[in-house]
Amino acid sequence: MGVCLLWLSACAVVSPVVTPPALPVSAELPQAQEGMDKNYWWFVRVKVVWPEEEPIAWYMDVLLAHQLFKPVLLKYAHDIELWRFHRRAGRDKAGHRFSFIFYAREATATAILNNLAENPLIPKLMGANRVEKIVLYEANKKPNSAIEATSDKNWSLTMQRAWPYFAMGGSQVWLSLIDQYAASAEHSLTHDSLENNDDIEALLAFYRQIDEKIVTTWEEEGGHAFLHHLNALFGYGDVAIYERRMIRF
Image (cartoon, rainbow, N blue to C red; front, top):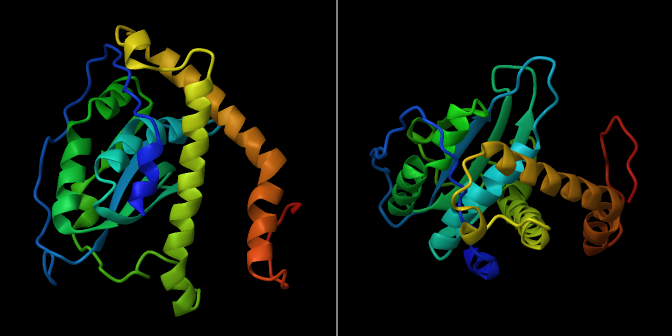
């Protein structure tokens, strides 16, 4: 399924001049217990800086998805069976955290994590006080091979096993929207046009604009394009929804 991402155009990482803190360039994962050819779930968590009294910088998730994780997905498209993004922000210990979760063999996971450890984008964002840390190897000490391992345990086992495919599809749609808006922006970020740009604020401003377009798309089209057609797929049956705000389909 990762092949679905191959049509997305490659996007270069902007290289602002910032002196970053050091990140490990490589590390070994603990050897999986059930064989080298088995898929396991792996996690990459980026903690975004969220100062008190400041709004959530949701655009940082958009930036990370497009600039940090999309190149990995393109490079390892044939080796990742399942993947998804997870976004959350709360005034708690976890704070604002953006996660990339993928299901692959240990060798693939090692290559991906080492690739991300060597990527210059995160140190630059850390140096600019936009990212607090990236959690790579320590988040994967006990990989789990069960397809349902990362699903909500309150669901039925059948739903737990099916849901990762839904989550990947939703993440693909979200990333595709980001990619299309980035490519069509008036000042699109490309290697040729911005390779000498040393202002990280330009990068942040660009993805603020992309995030605004994504929010508008969800507000104006999400109800019909996603929720209505998902409802239709399940035969327009009744569904229990627990929500504290208005919902329109």
